[in-house]
Length: 309
Image (cartoon, rainbow, N blue to C red; front, side, top):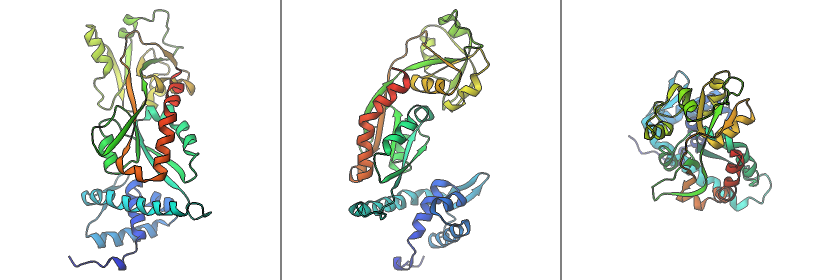
């Protein structure tokens, strides 16, 4: 491979690469960058020639990055982040710095319960113009932070890497959701809880904390359906005599936009920690640093308010 002269390369190609990688679509990347799709495609063609790699391949729903593109992304995104930080030196100059998009990883139960509050909190930082929520969990969060797929994370539980900082912003527990029009709560007890059909929300889809606790009591529930998304609960539960047991903050949030009712579980669940996590390097990023401080101070009250505590 011939040596490449960096002076001959249009560094705008970095912005295109990062946008296409994150949007998984040339069309959406063009909208994000205020460029036409043909301009994005032309930049992709230059990048493919430059790196001698396809970088992105088409699938049924958009573009999938190649292994090499996955390796390039963390470095190129960090390059853009560091370049953006230089404009903080001139943030007092009106119109020079237009703000940042901060990507936050969390499961949709936290997004349902705290998403709108997080958006309002972020408005306190003029240079943070948009939050972007993506799905993660306690298993994936560390890798996503270190690969720079996300900037911050809210998860149930912390991380173990020395390269990731984590602070507990609250604790949670569980609640049951039912449709009061079809469930009937006159005999709400452990036997009713076990006899009725259950909707399981789980990334694995087969087994959950409820099953562990019931097993310790010598009992077993009947799972009618499982889903990986909390937002599917109203559609699956409404009009049935089934129930679901999910984090209380998510259950309380769902009752605000549905006819479902929150009940206290007839079994005792342990509390779990809710953590805010970020990369160590974020300490050098003034926008992230300010957002971390605001979230650390306020997410606990947002969480408790959403859970009805």
